[in-house]
Amino acid sequence: MINCSQSRASLLEVDGLTVEYRLKGLSLRAIDDVSFAVRPGEAIALVGESGSGKTTTAMAIAGLLSSNARVSSGEVRYRGNRLPIDNDNAMRLHRWSETSVVFQGAMNALNPVHRVIKQIAEPCMLKLSMSRDQATVRAKELLELVGIPADRGTAYPHQLSGGMRQRVMIAMALACRPSIIIGDEPTTALDVITQAQILKLLGELRSRLNLALILITHDLSVVAETCDRVMIMYAGRIVEDGTVAEIFTKPKHPYTRLLIDSIPNPANGKKMIRPIAGDPPNLINRPPGCAFHPRCPSAMGECAIEIPRLDKLGSRRVACHLHRSSLEDKVAAHA
Ligand code: SF4
Image (cartoon, rainbow, N blue to C red):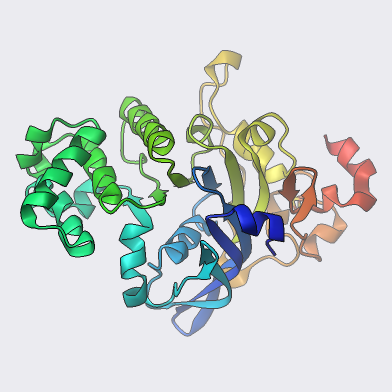
């Protein structure tokens, strides 16, 4: 649950959110009791492997869950008001004017037969009731804001580089002056140099426009420069939540440690990605107890029986039996 002091300062609150998908008669719990809050201008990252629930969390916040998804418990509040996240029509205005999404793979998200300036102007006309001329002026301003000369707005998507197309997506996301941008793997399809440029742009826009940023990524290395706080997700649950400094310098959860260890670091001779042994769990047949226990090098007997709670540990939250107060001696042994 979110406490009152969080609630007063928060722009967005995700409170006990659980989402299930129906698949061929089976129910799959994609996220389970997810809670966190985002303050105005704050940048957080949701990080995890495929199937961790990070994208379902983001899509739920944006009201973009697929038709076979059901919010089985919990809620999302924006400025203290409950959002109708399972009602696509009711969420449409909110989605552009308060929360916008930048998806990966701009080539798929942009309409190939329309010039990009028209695609940026469209939400301004539809959501802000601007005339075509006013919307075109706004679209040119937005192109300049994301680092594209306004005269390039006459290009079609295929005439722009991958990085420029992603900048166009960001311009579209900003069209209706939202307070929150959700970036769903916004740099995954880009080369490392363009990826760094897009992350830098998001960081600059965030401080210039006081935007809150929710970055969804499987790649922990991209969040260090961009985000204030990181939430590590595994099998639909948050397993660790802390500041970037805490997570990178003193990770508490064994999964977080392995994620950090997997990042190449030429400074210490680690040039290759070191994958985590084993596979993410099948959510239809989730392991009992801690879902990470079949892969965890620190697993103990109770790990296969009892699901660890996400407990507060100083300024962070951790879900691991090693960090229960009664097991402090085991923490020291595994530190
Ligand atoms: Fe490992 Fe047990 Fe902690 Fe899960 S609860 S991460 S299995 S030590």
